[in-house]
Length: 144
Image 1: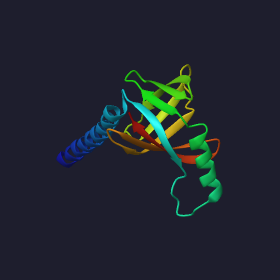
Image 2 (image 1 turned 135 degrees about the horizontal axis):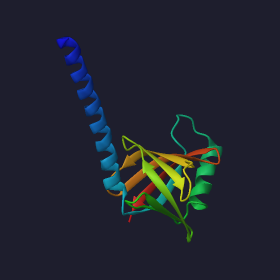
Image 3 (image 1 turned 180 degrees about the vertical axis):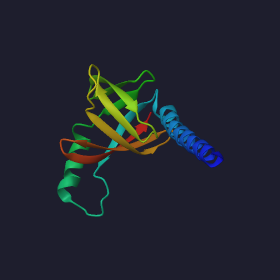
Image 4 (image 1 turned 45 degrees about the horizontal axis):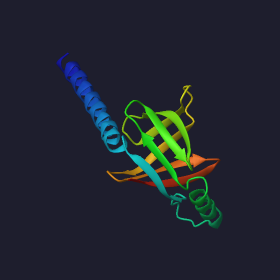
């Protein structure tokens, strides 16, 4: 009986520790991400060991086209704003436990339309992977 109780206490302690660590990651991401305007400075294909000229060209076209003059702003009420060459859009976001994945939703609706995976995040730099039109890419952003 005593061993079973010890196992239950250990299991609960482990669960609480994991939950706490995941919550710390989410809080840290929120602290660094929110209330800044993140400007896209580069678009690159993810490093997979092989150089592909077509993928590199597609990344360059995205950087100089769709993502030129693009920015993102995340607010603490779960809303985000994007600006693509003067056209503003709004949506909702959720930072997943652990703080490494951000799910993006339309302003009205609950279906995820994009998930971004954070690669790097500090006070002034954000990079994440995303897929757009079957093109896997890394966006590099700076906070100004």
